[in-house]
Structure formats: C-alpha cells, structure tokens
Length: 101
Image (tube, helix red, strand yellow):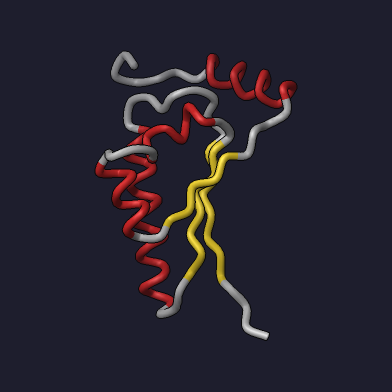
C-alpha cells in the first residue's frame, strides 16, 4: 500500500485577515510547493481555516487564489465550536498589531 504525504497549515483566525496575514498565506503556499519539489513526489497540500471570512482571500479571482489553485493547494474550512471561537476572539483582541492595523 502506498502512503500519501500531507502538509497542512491551520489558521485559527476568526474574521478577515489583516495586515500582513495574507502575505503569510502566500509564504505558506510557496513553502508547501517547495516541499513537494524537494520530496520529488506529489504531496497533498491543505490550508485549513476556522471560518469563511478568514478563507476569503483564497476565493475568487485574486492572484493568491490563483496561485493556490495552480499549485493544487486545497482550501478547507472547519468551523470551531462557539466556546473555542470566543476564546480565539479573546486572544485576538489581546494581540498587539503593528503598523496601526
């Protein structure tokens, strides 16, 4: 039986991405693609989000969405339980964003 390698990046962000967070997505897509080249085999590549709003940057006709699609990166959304969402939002509110964002 042949095994399939999977690489996944998980984003717990609740709400739309801000500041340089879309750049982080681009970086992660590139890293997953490079890993696939390095391994010399097909790798299942997944970006997993906790809600639709955070995943929106990878929808539609943006260059980032096009890159994900062209490099066969799957986009999955797994909704978190309400209690966990509240904890994540609380943590997000405590974070200090630089550059006034």
